[in-house]
Length: 220
Ligand code: G6P
Ligand code: MG
Image (cartoon, rainbow, N blue to C red; front, side):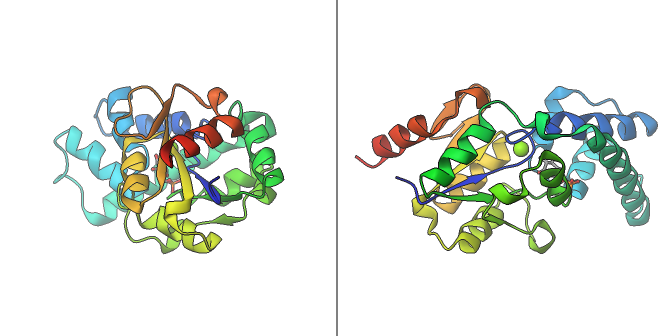
C-alpha cells in the first residue's frame, strides 16, 4: 500500500476553486477583461500573482499595469476571496473526503497537503480538518508554483516518505503535471484532465479500497 496520500486543497478537499473564480471574475470585470470557466481551468494550482498575470495576458493587458498596480489588484482579489471563505464550514468538505481521511489514519497511511494557497491554514481551520493532516507544505516557502513538483516534494519530505511511495490527488492540470514530475502516482479529479495515472469524475468516487487496488495494479 502507499505510505502517504497527499491532497491538493482547492477543488479536492473543498470547492474553493469556484470561489477563486468568482473573486478573479470581479477583479477582471473592474478592469474590463471578461473571463470564463475555460481560463479558470488554467488558473487552478497557479499562484495568486501567476493567476493575475494570466488574466491580464488573456485581455492583452499585460503591459498596462505597474508592479505596484498588480500587487494592489492581487491584494484586492484576495480580500474578496477571503470574505467569501466565511461561508465555509465542516459541511463544505467535498463528498468522500472526510471518510477517506479517517480511513487513511486507520490504515496508518500518512496524510499530507500540497497547496500553493497562502490561505490554506485558514481554510483547513474553517473545515475543521487541521488535525487530519500530518503535514502541510508551507506555500510561503515555495518558490515555484505547480506544474513544478516543488510543493509535492516538500510535502513528501515533511512526511518523511519518498515520492515513489506516495499517491497525490489533484483537480488541476498543473497539479497532475506537478505530481507526475515528483515521481508520485497521480489521481485526477475531473474528466478533462490529461496524464493522470487514475482519473475519477469527482471526489465521491474516492475511497480507500479503490486507492489500494489502484496502487496494486501500478505495482504488479
Ligand atoms: C491554489 C488554487 C489557485 C490559487 C492558488 C493561490 O493553487 O488552485 O487558484 O491561485 O492556490 O491561492 P491564494 O489563496 O494564496 O491566493
Ligand atoms: Mg486544486
